Length: 150
Image (cartoon, rainbow, N blue to C red; front, side, top):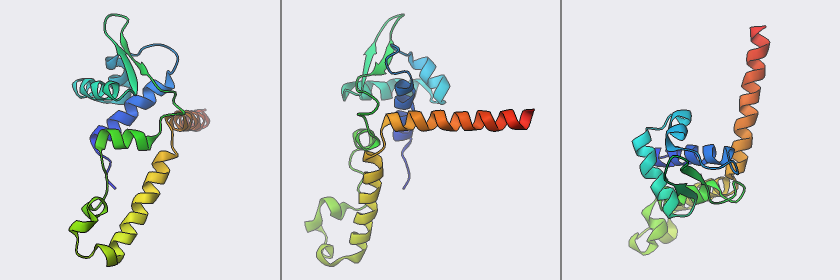
C-alpha cells in the first residue's frame, strides 16, 4: 500500500496540532518547518482540513491553526478517507455488477481481506496514539544518544 503524499503531510500536520492540543493556534510556517512540509502545499491542505471540520483556523498575527476535534476522537481512517477518498484496491468492491467474475473471484476475496485489515488498523489508531508513540520514540532516541555520548 502506497500512502499518498497528501495523506502523509495531512497526518503529520494533524499530529503536530495534536501534540499542541489545547495550547492555542500554531502558525502554518511553524508546522511546515517542524514537519518538513512545503508551506504553500500545507496552506492548501489546511484549507481542506478546515472545511471538513478537523481543524479551526484564524487569520492575523495571533492566528494559526488548532485541532477542532480531540486527538483521541480523530482516527487515521477518518483522515485517510477524507483526504484520499475511497481507497479500495479494486473497482469491483464498489461496482461488483461491473465484473463478470465478481461472485466467484478468489482474488477479490483476498484483496477485500487486506482492505478490511488496513481499515481496522487505521480506525483504531487515533492522533492521540500517534502523539504518544512519537513522544516514546523521541525519548528512546534521546536515551540512546545520552548513553552513547557519555
